[in-house]
Image (cartoon, rainbow, N blue to C red; front, side):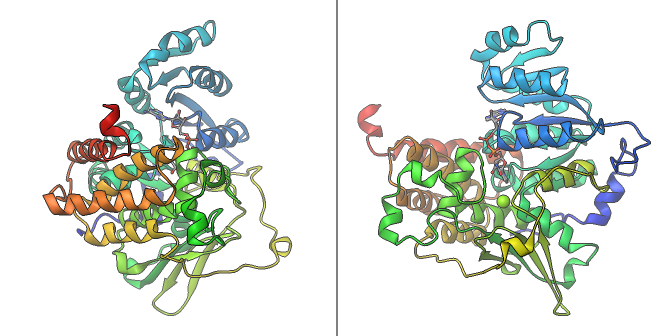
Length: 421
Ligand code: NAD
Ligand code: MG
C-alpha cells in the first residue's frame, strides 16, 4: 500500500499559526469558529458540551445532522449556530418549524450538509457516522479547513484521497478518535523512523469473556451494552465485534502514515491507556485519560493550546489495576478480516467499510446473526479480490463508487432479500 502523508504535531502547530484564537484560558484573540457535522450524535453532543464549557472560546458557524429535525434545531439554538442542515430532505419543514423565530437558517438535503461543512470556520468537527460523512468532510478539507475527525469511516473508505487532499490544501486532520488522539499526543515531535510500534488499545467490548457460541447468538441489546463508553449504535456494534479496532488500525495507517507491520492492538478492559508509541531506543510513551470523549474533542478544538474542561479526571488509584491481553481472533474474526483488508491494500479497506455498514444495519434489524457480520464482510472482501473491484480508489468519487457497488451486492446477499425484491 502506498505511503501517505503523516500527521506530525509540530507541523500541525505550524498549520494553526495563522488561525483564530488558540483558546488557552487567557485568551486574547478572537474565538475560534467551529462547524459540527453530526451535531446530534454522541460525539456531536460531547462537542457541544466542550464548546459550552469553554467560556466563549468558540463560536459555532453551522451544525448538521441526519434525520432528527427537532434534535438539530435544539442544538443549533443551544450553540447559537446561524445555519442548520439536515441530511434528510423530508425533514425540511419540521426543521423550519422547529427553528421558527430563532433566526437560524434551515436547509435540508445532502448538499445542505456540504454547505454547512463549507461555512466560514477555523475547524470542522467530522462526527457523522459512516461513509455518509465522506462527501461533506472531504469538502471541508478541500476548502482548507482544519478537520477534527471522529468519523473514521471517512479514512477507511477514502483514506488515500483524504490524506492527499490534506497535504494539497496545507491543512490538517486532527484525530478525535481517542486511541489516535492518544498516539498523536504520545508521539510528540518524534521522527517516524524512530517509531517501532504504534499500539491501539481496545476495551474488548461486552463479549470479551464470552464463548464463541454465546457471541454467535448475541442479540442487538446485548451488543449495544458497552461496558465503558456510551456511543452511537453503529460504532457500539463495531466495538462488540472488534471491527471498530480493525477500522481504527486502518485509520491509523492513513493518519500517521505507518505501514501495517508497525501497528498493533492490545485488549485493555479498563480503557485508560488509549494508545502507545514504542520508540527505537526502547522507550514507550502512552496516552492516558478517563474514558470520556470530551478529552480528545477538547484537545483537537484547542490544538495546539489546551482547554480547561469538565471532562472526567483520571484517578489511577481508584482504577487500581490496568491489564492488557492479546486479542482473540478466533472469537473476534472481524478484527482479523479488517487487518487482512489493510494488508491486502488496494480498494479492500473501502470494500470492508461498505460491507460492514450494511452488515451492522442488518444485524440491528435482526436480519442476520452477530457472527454473520464478520462472515458477510469477509465474503465481500473475497468477492472484491476475485472480480477486480480491488483497485485502490485515488479519488473520493472512485471510493464512493466502490462503496455503492459493495453496499448493493451485500444487501442483495442478505437472507430473504431475493424473495422480498
Ligand atoms: P451517532 O450515531 O451518535 O451520531 C451520528 C451523527 O451523524 C448524528 O448526528 C446523525 O444525525 C448524523 N448523520 C447521520 N447521517 C448523516 C448524514 N448523511 N449527514 C449528516 N449527518 C448525518 O454516532 P457517534 O457515536 O457520535 O459517532 C460518530 C462518528 O464518530 C463515527 O464515525 C464513530 O465511529 C466516531 N467515533 C465515535 C466515538 C464515540 O464515543 N461515540 C468515539 C470515536 C469515534
Ligand atoms: Mg476509538
